[in-house]
Length: 130
Image 1 (spheres, rainbow, N blue to C red):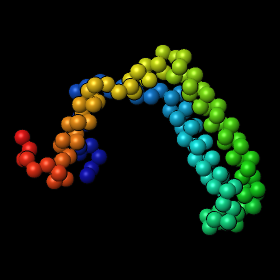
Image 2: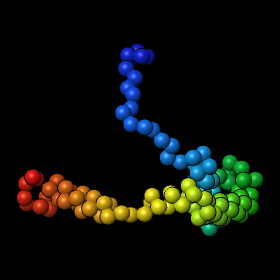
Image 3: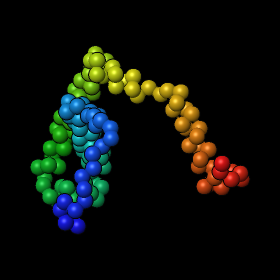
Image 4: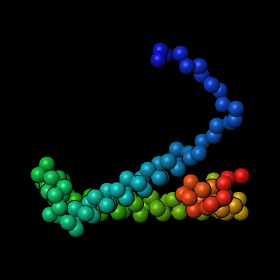
């Protein structure tokens, strides 16, 4: 398809930012530090695993530094977690995010409706759909 062959559609509703840059950085830091903790923790606990031996063959320095990398990642995760808690407890946007995440009565009725709609395709319900 040639560039410009598909017409640009405008949205009939307003677009909004779901998370600010700071919130994305918080979540990214938590994600990366957790993944580094998992990898380095497995390297410390299971040094004879096949993939750990592969990393050791690539560079002995990385393998020797795994404990310090693990500790640094732990400190980063604790700091990011504490900042995240401060953010959601003491900033207006954080408090609003918590309020938005709390379940409502509509969530329960949506869950019931979705299980009802799944019974027919799963052949758990003999009646035809309305």
